[in-house]
Amino acid sequence: SQKIEQNSEALNIQEGKTATLTCNYTNYSPAYLQWYRQDPGRGPVFLLLIRENEKEKRKERLKVTFDTTLKQSLFHITASQPADSATYLCALSSSTSYGKLTFGQGTILTVHP
Amino acid sequence: KAGVTQTPRYLIKTRGQQVTLSCSPISGHRSVSWYQQTPGQGLQFLFEYFSETQRNKGNFPGRFSGRQFSNSRSEMNVSTLELGDSALYLCASSLEGSLLGNTIYFGEGSWLTVV
Image 1 (cartoon, each protein chain N blue to C red):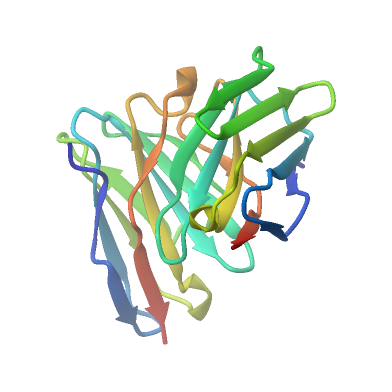
Image 2 (image 1 turned 45 degrees about the horizontal axis):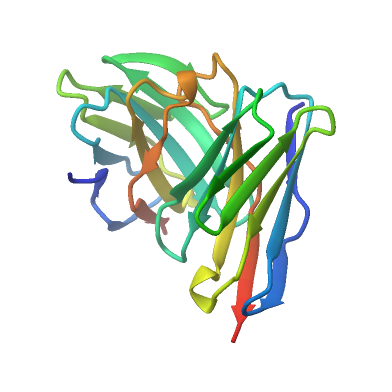
């Protein structure tokens, strides 16, 4: 069965450092991989989308890589700030999944001042 | 423009009752998906509607149902509520669903507590 694993349940880093979150998947051939941020009691907020034929995507302090051979995505937040503290979710979708995203369990990131 | 709107925000129901949750997608979006989020299972896909047709369905019992109206607004219904149905129910909208990599936007969710 399809399985998505985010490597850490929780990640603690110091302000100014780069946070790196990992998303691994098995038994899946995704066409797209997305990263979301979720704050307590709120809905997920879209951050970045990367397609299967793309290796890397950037947006301001965020960078996502997608390696379909390793079946892995890395999500980086550079120059992290306490305001970046949240749960980060990776989600996969195929070209025929019609609105369905398959989510990982999420990584709780805490950035300490 | 306005985001995805879900109502009610919070509700408490008794076992055996039924509940209806409502979702208004972003203007112009025709795809609406529903998800259940619990601490143990995380975010799980319930179903997706596009132009009033259910195109995809997750692995939930038949007690979970939904529909979409001609204005793209959607409702989901859970009948014969069980304690395990307590969760955050999230609605998401997009232009075409996840096809073509359309961005999917989530609402703030409806918190359902079953007692």
